[in-house]
Structures are given as structure tokens and as C-alpha cells.
Image (cartoon, rainbow, N blue to C red; front, side):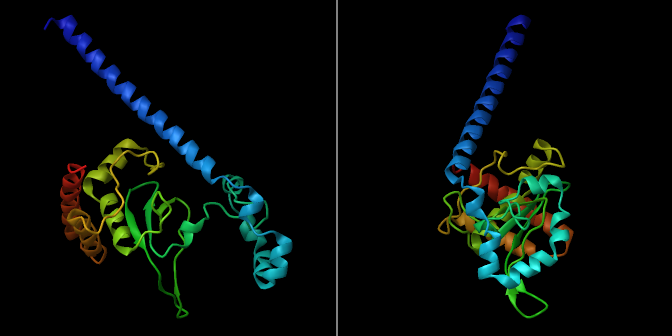
Length: 233
């Protein structure tokens, strides 16, 4: 092949790659717009109004009113994202917030994930924790079904595998990881699939360890099983 022909071939290959990336990004954008449109509701439908709360939950309203200054100390960006117009309206609140099992992942600095599940409180009740800002959470499948314990650890296992961590850290800036914009394989959990069960078991095993060397070994095992899972698509 002549030098000029070789260079032309490289340019064509690169153009094809760019076109594929742009096409996939456009498809993702349209899919996200359709998803948002299907779930759009008015602010008045999302937040309990002040008059109704004063009637149905007077003690809760008094509590919120006494902490109004603290609620108002949120950033302006958070206020813009409020799910309602009342002063106690919050952002990033939905049915997924109260799921029994939640996979939480950091959206900045060092990417990692963990499973959040109900735990005993100091006052003796079993309660679910609510994740703070800078946290990406998964509590339901794309069809809206709440995930169970095994599926939560399956998802966390994939997210904590070496290969996915490297992908996230090399694809996004360290102050803006995104699961919605990522393009790695994350299937719905299938308890009849031995690879799915293995990933879930490895993640559970790692969650009970403090030894970083042992955890790193499990992360490498997770990567091997995950790659095998991807090859079966």
C-alpha cells in the first residue's frame, strides 16, 4: 500500500469511528429526552402544598418551618432543581430514594460504589439511609422495578470491577462521573445466570473486608467474570 493510500485509509477509519460515536451520542440524547417526557409531571403534583401539609401533617410542617433557615442555605443550583415551589421542596427525590436496596456511587474524585440497605439506628429502629449530594444511585431497573439484595450487589460488583473503574476514570473528568452517559454493559440481574450470581457473591464478599489487598484481588476477579459476561451478549 502506498504511503498516501495508507494515510487515506487511516483517515477513513478515524472518520468512521467519529461517526459511530456521534451516532451513539445522538441516540442516547433522544432516548433520554423521550424518557424525561414520559415521566414529566408538574411541580404541583410532586410536592405536598403548604395548606395541605398544615392540615394533614401539622407536626411535620412545624418541624420544617423551624428549620427553614437551614433548608434555605442550600446552593442556588440545588434550589433551581427543587421538585416543587415550597421552601421545603428538595431535589433528587423520587420513589428510588426509599428503595430497600440502593447502589450508590461517587460522582467525583475516586470512582467506587457500595450497597445501601436498611440498618439499625442508634434509637433502635431499622431505617434506610438517604444519600447526600455528589452521589449517583440505582434503586430500580429501567422498567421501574425495585432491585433486590442480590441484584444490588451484582450492580455494585460490576461498578467496582477494575475494568469499569478504569473506564469511568479515563472517560470522564474526576469531578463529573456519569452513569447515564457511560457505555458499559449493565444487564438486568438474572438469578438463573451463573455469571450474574458469581459477581453478586464476590461483591458481597468484598463488602465485608477491610484488607485492601484482598479487596483488590476480588476486584480483579470481578473484572474477569465481567469480561466473560460481556462476551456472552
